[in-house]
Length: 195
Length: 383
Image 1 (cartoon, rainbow over the protein chains, first blue to last red):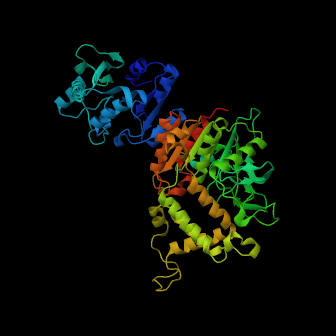
Image 2 (cartoon, chains in turn brown, yellow):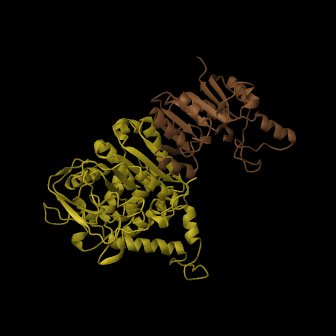
Image 3 (cartoon, rainbow over the protein chains, first blue to last red):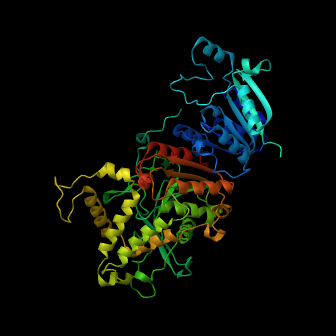
């Protein structure tokens, strides 16, 4: 596994949990979850090459567009719905977040932290940030909704979503000092609001 | 990222093949309540059944195809199987690994017992007296064939369109006898529009003066006009609007100006007439009537208050569902209904929605995304 958010996600998933991975790419997270936790799951992916890679990886994959919502899935059909490094590409973010916690009891969301100091510095110096976490130029990026750790916390609060756990990372190491400045990737474990 | 494998890498033919027949003299109780006293099924096989008998794959055909899935006949080398681009050594359904069976379903007209066969009670062709068979009946007959070949459990059952209904039904009729079901260009039940098209086709056949209430064999005639029109209607629904426009446009046939008469003006008219003529020369009208009824009647959710997820509860197979975005006969939306029901029933399923322009017939094409996915899926089936 190369992406730093995958290790904590695998750690947070309970053995045997039913998982749904939105924007699952080549299915490597689901493959890892099956091997490490015997957690059965489905991936959702729109890209043809990703879908094919999932099938090669023997991962259940559904070729669907997340922007259409999660109407294919019943309430409470998963223990955890994962949105790994995909949040920033979603247009209807609020709708999808609500849908994730309708379909799953919990959700895990990871995203590149736009508040990371290098990103701030690049903007300060006059350019849009380009980095290993944000490898696109402004004109060819699939990212439409970038945010900082603090933005996401405000957003969760506004939607009434509970933050169960938060981990901010840089190069696979947890950052506890000034995380919104020194961490490049954030991972949140989220739950429904208390009734 | 993995590039899809190119079709060239799937080269290889199973070569010369021979049709076989299996005879069954234990009566088959049909869904209609009728009893078929005895029957014969035509089939072909490709590859070798392994010692564990765990590598058998049943290929189910759609409306006008047959058991001749792959390869060619020694005396007729141009007669290549209808899914030869999928089945063969090194192809997505690899015959070096799998033992593949093509079966002509019951009531068809390519060698299996059907309306043109002899009714043992009268010594004459069954004609209109041949019972109406259903998708469930086809599957029950195929299970007899599996017994005959010593196959307890299929590694997979695969089909497109009407064949996909059989692949679905296998998981419901014989949950323990199929490990994977590959359901392509499918619908869980026909829409009113689908049934409407079928009814127009049937009316075309039944109002043909040569139909003789289905007993045309003994009159030495064939309801050719009806069959032609039935096929022309069918063909329109197999292609997308854009594929038809791309292929034919508004091009005129052998003229520069419209003729202001009712002979052929446009290329599309010529094409449809040609397809109709070809079909009427080889297909049996009584079979056509029965197949369209089998399609109309198929509804696995019917016994479960319309709840398809409930119907799937007894299935134990893994599923691969594939649809094509330009298919307006059985839209992607219909495949998504199947996927949703499978998810609700907590079954193992993968779903592919291929952005292909050809329409319903896309399931017969060798689009690299489609064939690449099938190759990957078959590749992961343990033997």
